[in-house]
Amino acid sequence: MNWNCQPLGPNVNSHMERLHPPEPGGLEASLLQMINDHNTASLKLREQTEKSKKEAIRTAMRVSDLLVNAVNGNVQEVFIIEKRIEMEIRALAAAVARFSKQTDQWLTASHTINTAVKDRQTRRGATNVISFWTHNPPF
Image (cartoon, rainbow, N blue to C red; front, side):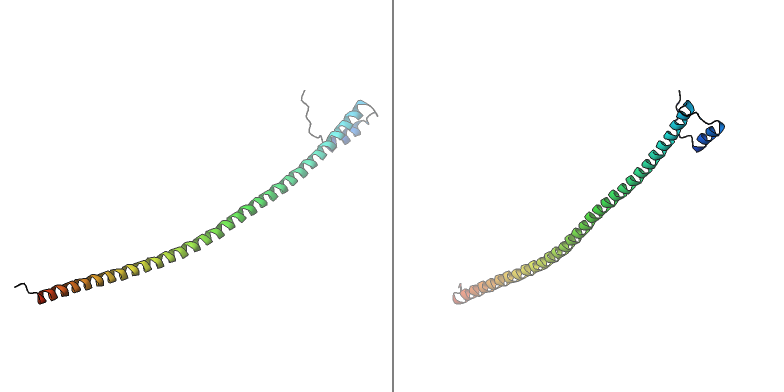
């Protein structure tokens, strides 16, 4: 047997009632009552399903909005941190350049001092040799 549970519609009841009025408490009256009950239950179920569907859509949209806000908040925080890091990198690069320049200046100064000391020692040594040979000629 194939039981089709779809509502038959309002025309079936009125059409059947017009042909012959059902006997109260009879089989036709019971069938008509079952059809009416089925149609009423189907309508209520359809309304409840539609209401649940709308509520599910509203809830899904709310969850989606919350997720987007959470992700956007984290993304915004990441961008702020990234900007801070970039600023620190620039400051560190400037400090490294400044220290590198100072190091070069110190190296140049120490090289100049070493050269002057060596030159003076060389001249002093030459002066001592000349003085020694002048005061003590070899022949």
